[in-house]
Image 1: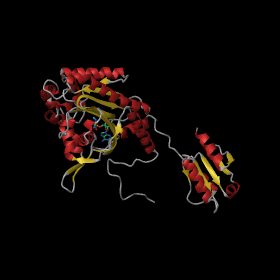
Image 2: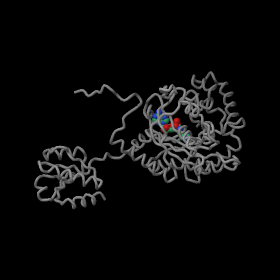
Image 3: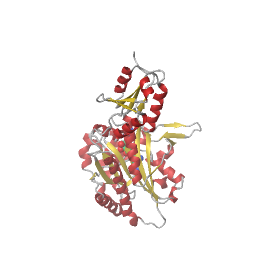
Image 4: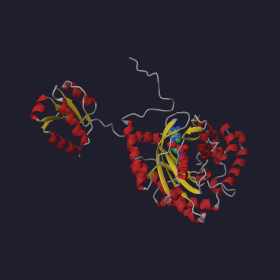
Length: 437
Ligand code: HAM
């Protein structure tokens, strides 16, 4: 019989099912535990926000805002959007809850679904999951930039160290961390560089593809991101931002590198790493994993001093990252680090009209002791029960018939080798607990 539902999950979305969801849970628990050791607390912002929040933060000319948001008119006619990322929401919440008066810096992490209407492919979905973290610190009156450069660099390095610690805890190897500094938006820094870049790009405009041609006007930095084979040689010959940073940004970048080395975090510099969201300044970074094909960035992040102020808050520094959880899971699976599916510890093979109460009591006792127990809802022949126990990957079958109930001696069968033991109820829990190790 065909089993085709009238409905299917919408393109770019999918159901996550057991046993894979056990891996998702382990990844999320590990994130909570590692981030906790770095002093981060969890924030759960809403999944939809005013469209304007994302447009302002991420930038109108970015792909995310111009083409990928799921936006709709709410009943009061306001425009709302499913969140394409969470940094903007965290900054909104920071302002809304007056978090600048909390002990600084404020360190928050989040887990959850994000939505972007991209072309789906391996590692790219329209509903995907991020694990992210943000560090926010409102600038105290009188605090000068120069004094805090080293401190900011140490915060950047610690945030990156935290991501790498998390990946290491999951056993993920072969990751590559790339870093860059994109300076700050002053004429003597990034703005000057962008003008220079635009002028250089104009000279080779005819040789560029339509996307890059358009970006000469809208955002020349994004040309550096191009993966088009035909543009690579041209891009390699362009002026590099590292040679055009102001003194403060350049010092800060040098300190980030020193701080990473101090923490034993290996990195590579990539002057073309500009990121696709407008709020970044100074430090940017990305982490790529093997075996993911073209969508190999498992984490992206950077510094975004000024975003909180742009959203109406006080001048505030920010740095953070987001890990693509779907891609992280894919690379764990490809590296053979996925969990073996967990079966049942005990399958209760019961038979006989008067046996059910004992079977229920046994299931309750075993579950209270933390075992995974399968209790068939109706009696069935022992042969059928043992077959099902096997299919469910059970370690033991607890055989309960009228004889066992009458004698109080239950039969525990080890399914791997077929051995059997007669045990009282309390001995059973003891034996199973001991075998759990
Ligand atoms: P992002 O680079 O846009 O940064 O996304 C971060 C990560 O999310 C990517 O590296 C990728 O692993 C994953 N990702 C993005 N889009 C998709 C998709 N369509 N399908 C699957 N995975 C995807 C941000 O979102 C920033 N908010 C990060 C940040 C936080 N910067 C500072 N704080």
